[in-house]
Image (cartoon, rainbow, N blue to C red; front, side):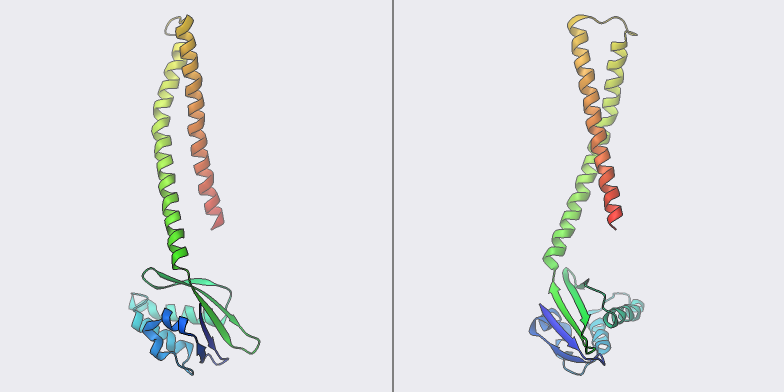
Length: 193
């Protein structure tokens, strides 16, 4: 893990080799005495982040505010497909220390899981809706035939149509349950955020 520490005047005190490895674009500037604001400005200029020049000042201000009032860990995209979890805290002496952990693999796995979940949801919704229309027609036709309005049906034919109708109703309930589970999953996800 990367480690960095700043004194009460926001000047760099120490940094370990892993942190330097995580930030090669400013490694030459990571010397004791540099302020966090100086380092952020150099990092933004050398890293070209954010891409829109007019957003860079606001990004630096937000990052400085987070540094000055650490409230827990956050995820920072350092470069394309390279993510670090930043955990900063203030010591009783006013120093700010940061632990930087590479979470790129976890972020990729989470993104892949979210993509798979979206594909699963889309697939189940499509299958459910594609099944619902013909099932409705099938159940309606079987119910009409069994009602006797199309003529009397007896014997083995009636028995076969009864079985087909029951199975159609059962399959229709299964499709409805799949749609309900999908709806509940979407609502649960929206509640989590």
